[in-house]
Amino acid sequence: MLIIEKSQPGRTNTAQIPRDVEAVTDIPETMLRKSPINLPEVSEMQTVRHYTQLSQKNFSIDTQFYPLGSCTMKYNPRGCNTLAMLPGFAQRHPYSPDNLSQGYLACMFELQEMLKTVTGMIEVSLAPMAGAQGEFAGVAMIRAYHDAKGDDERTEILVPDAAHGTNPATATMCNYKVKEIPTNDEGDVDVDALKAAVGPQTAGIMLTNPSTLGVFERRIKEIADIVHQAGGLLYYDGANLNAILGKVKPGDMGFDVIHMNLHKTFSTPHGGGGPGAGPVGVSERLIPYLPVPMVTKENDQYRLLTEEDCPDTMGRLSAFMGNAGVLLRAYIYAAMLGRDGMQRVADYATLNANYLMVKLKKAGFELAFDNRRATHEFIVTLKKQSKDLNVSAMDFAKRLLDYGYHAPTTYFPLLVPECFLIEPTETETKQELDGFIEAMISINEEAASNTETVISAPHTLPVRRLDDVKAAKELDLNWN
Amino acid sequence: MSNVPSELRFTKSHEWIRLEDDGSVTIGITDHAQDLLGDLVFVETPEVGSTYATGDDCAVVESVKAASDVYSPLSGEITEVNEDLADAPEVINTDPYGKGWIFKMTLADEGEIDSLLDATAYSDQIAAEE
Image (cartoon, rainbow over the protein chains, first blue to last red):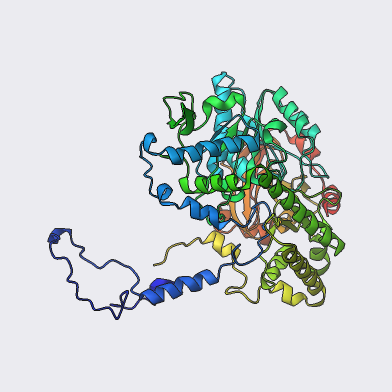
């Protein structure tokens, strides 16, 4: 029920408080509303209950294990949020002059420096407001680089078939043609196919490493050489950065540009549609094209670099520099973790994934890449259950909800049939992981012994199976 | 087991091709492909009059699970597209080889048809994928 449906005419906020304050009468007649504004008329308590009950229906990281592969749904320390909300930060106006913003600018400068250290890139811009803008900025810089050299023959971006759907979308937005590169049986990019695909038309390649298949791209140096020798650049999609924090740097792998999703790796809750932060880092050759503003330090003073300082910049992505609150949380998180903490994130993200993977394998689940070690995530394929019992990955996913676990990512990557992409993250305990394993084993038994229960799940949530087709075809987001 | 009509030709990327009496071809996606995709919610058809080379992506089928390119199995010019798919993409699920056709084209080189898979070869391929 929507709050507006609970509305009763005349009901106001605080029923028992005497209304002895006269309405203001000196507003000119012509400026008064002719009709009442269409807001729900409910009491304060009704409002509190409405939104509290709504929030209780959430299946969220604050309430449940949320192993959504490729999304890094980890715990975001509350302290990062508390510090980012300090009045000096929260009340700073974005038009405040640099000399009155030295504290904020110092944090942003240090964040740039920390991101450079952890990624091995030469310069970083915090300007992109989210992952999609970061990707766009990255590929726009690749285009600017080729354009500056007068190299207008480069019309193609290579994208492995395991890539996130955003990669081909970004390349298309930047007016490139997308060429797909196949993956081999072990989950690595097919290097022979790559060799055959590169040429004078290659602008670059977009890669995620570890890939969305939950494995580390082992021949990355060779891939970098092949693309560079053809005159193309390498773009790193930072979606899976959590797995390698402090361990291996995209800069060392040969990447020319990277975007980072600070809202997944660096302490901002995500999945709700924002706000996010998608900073970009670049190698030497792309520095001139970085989006502005950026922060620089001169004679112990911080100031924003603008178009005047960076004449070749690809431009601005918003009026100001990214989402300040998200960037502050990231700064605080990175500063709290430090170098050792970053490595522990990668260590435990990887350890938890491998623990889950081995336990599930021992319990009889089939792995998509059986002879590979997991990175921060791994893939179980339920094609046998689907074929033998007609119980699909979607059915397993829905039944997991009844057991109190958010489902892993299903049906992505598309290369693996009936797949579960499972990412536990570093913030879960062994007990939580064991509980998830037990639930998976139990559902696997139910799939055979009590099929109907599984294929009609969930049974315990406010809604049952949603009509995906109707939702996709008849999008209706308005109440009226 | 999905339906693979013996009179049609196929591609590895799951398009089917029917050679018409006038030498043109009708193209759609196979029963196996629609089964993998699940309930279709949107189809983007190519423009009539546009030309494509073999292997070019020329249409998009989108289901509740995924969006997937449809590749031109042959070189030629688009002569007609299935307008009904705009309102009823689900006919690809219910009748992939009939009402679910996607586009028709005239061929630049009729000889190309010989390079397509026949029903046996396509059946073998989908069996190998499983």
